[in-house]
Image (cartoon, rainbow, N blue to C red; front, top):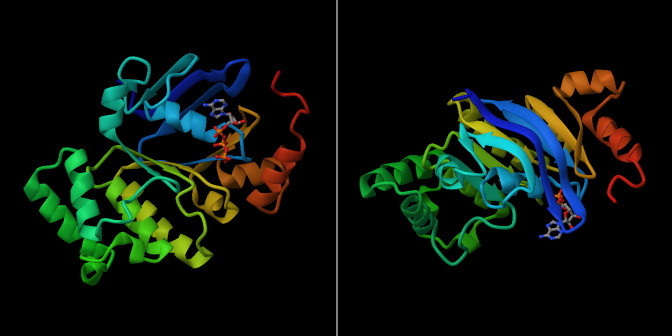
Length: 248
Ligand SMILES: Nc1ncnc2c1ncn2[C@@H]1O[C@H](COP(=O)(O)OP(=O)(O)OP(=O)(O)O)[C@@H](O)[C@H]1O
């Protein structure tokens, strides 16, 4: 079994004649923080859904946590955590109820759920809010809670789809402290974002344009390669240079 967290070879997804993800090939190390960037519609969510075992690829190959996403999608799902801006917590359940609910879904024992709940509430300093409805929490707190729940079952990889949309840079920075902590424990982080300050926090970044990976390296090397001051400059250069008819 490969010690790589993710390996893809020419992974492709077509919707009819449209190629949403076009022969992407890359590897992610265990414990790496891997940023998956691209403009709106570049194909990030499609790629991520395939890697999570939620969407069947059209062609190519990929393993996640050592499991084949074509033939072992259920095993993949057991080994990963997932958080998206659009789908995460139940607003009409309390903080504690959400933790208990997801702990149950992930198959944790009652004792494990109890211990993890106490640990998590303490770490996020949410003890006083434990019995409050999630809908009453500020967005930044919801995101931190949602991330902590996504790693409740100690997955080897966590997929984060635009996890920090709509919050300020300071709150985003606090969220990233949680990400670093998980990566230090060996959890692989696969994260999509539109915020270039977050891109700088990643160990390596890939940038997708029209379904293809156009660049992949550390933020430092990408800035060197594109003679750019910031990741934002790199991103804009790639987006501007995009071929007019990359898709049929
Ligand atoms: N089920 C589907 N059927 C047809 N086309 C789809 C389907 N899902 C996605 N697409 C198309 O594939 C392309 C890539 O979409 P995707 O959601 O993967 O992009 P994205 O990079 O995640 O964008 P965003 O940042 O806006 O979420 C888009 O043009 C989208 O309209």
